[in-house]
Image (tube, rainbow, N blue to C red):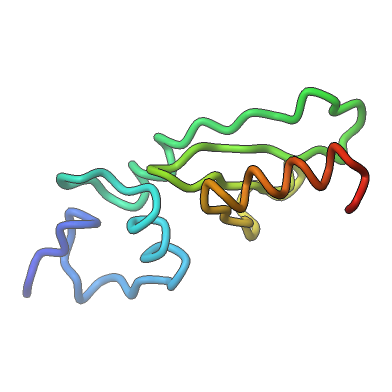
Length: 97
């Protein structure tokens, strides 16, 4: 059995979820590290104007900005390239979305 370097365990015991593979690409370390370690290393911040339970959280990956629903931290994320994040923030500030 081969050892899976991303999980530090046997590759026969785990099948990667596509989101985990994506996470390792956008946020993973340059050397080693497991999917769990990468998830744990992300620092999520709540939006400054969050006044209820309907909040968003933002984390910075290598270059991308990640956005998620604070009520569903294990749920899907939006991923923005730097120029797209800037455009998104402008649209929000100008009430275009």
